Image 1: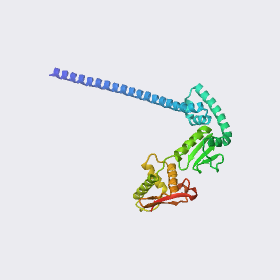
Image 2: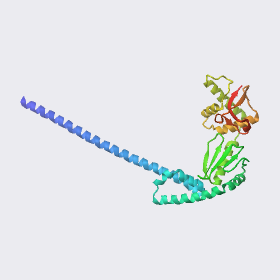
Image 3: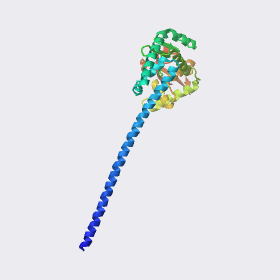
Image 4: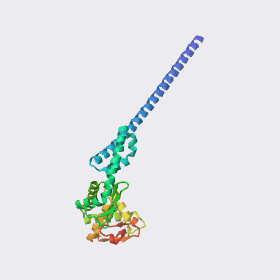
Length: 292
């Protein structure tokens, strides 16, 4: 009996020891696997960081090359200024080249700025674009003041801003500025226009605003910015500058009736809440629209 008990005890101890060894092996392997996981994650992060740096440098060189190739030195200088965070990533020879390019581009851009007031108007007229008589350097106006080109001879940049539109900033290189200006004029003014379609869009947006506001009744005047906001929700292609142009065309045609309702506009004293409609600037800022 005693011998059996000793045997059972030894077998139990053996099983327990085997279990301990198995657990030690699992724990050791688990620790090793975790170490390999951390190592892989660290390598992945390093690779991702290197990839981000490589992509940053690629974008930098991709933007710089065509501007420098085409002799658009102010635009090239703008790229150099905007990508200063890429400079520390360059090796010694590249950094030295960038220093030389910056000096060259800045000198060329300064020369362009000195003659811009004389050469820009000529280049614009050669492109068939009329300059508004109110234009005075450093601000030039086109299409009855609807488009402004503002010159900054400190940063060697030109900013093209349509009324109610998004500004476009370029390097102070005459040919690209004229090209972009011509592109904006075509985008804004050389489009097909259907008065009935536009009036229907206006009426539908107006009706939606009325329905969404319990404090308003059909026929009430609503803020024009509420209308533009509604239209922007209905169409990803909506832009306030195009809306301004189209509303001006509608007023010019005196085509204001839809479904027996006549569109009306009221003024506002706050320019931020209203719109100065192209071709109807003397009417002041319109801030409210209604169908009555």
